[in-house]
Amino acid sequence: MDCDKAVDISNAVIQIRKSNMKNTDIDVTLSNPTITVKPIMKSEQRLSSRKILGTQGSLTMERTAPVAMRAVDVAAGGLGVVVPHKLTAGQQCMVAFVVSTQGKKRRVAAVAKVTYCALRGDAEFHAGLQFTEIDTLATTAIADYMKN
Picture 1 (cartoon, rainbow, N blue to C red):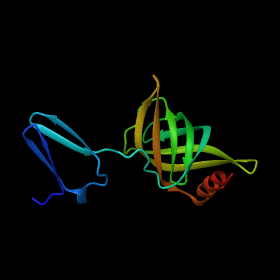
Picture 2: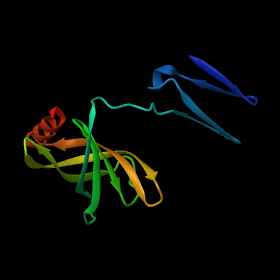
Picture 3: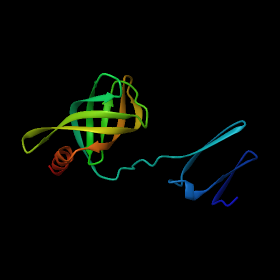
Picture 4: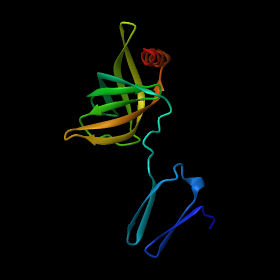
């Protein structure tokens, strides 16, 4: 087998192909007889800058009623939100929120994919959403908000 790295862990050898790994840092877990190797997420993987938002909005998962959410930050490609329950990475949702630009409140609605969700405090979760479907008016509203 062609490898770039070999790691010896208590008589078990793990071989990792760099070409298959986006990150070079890995997390290795050994529990007899299974060895799990997964990439460690880098702390910052955004493609664009973000701006603090702090507005209320709604989040709707498929076949569920909308839930209140707080949009904490926004970027051209996505949104950081705080929600009352755990979301699953990969889930699709619809989000709606408002940005203020040039003294006007502009509603933004988009379809997004959950990229991560982590417990924040005792009773809420912080989730990252990546826009997958967003119209030109919403994109323009976000871009205008990012400029101010």
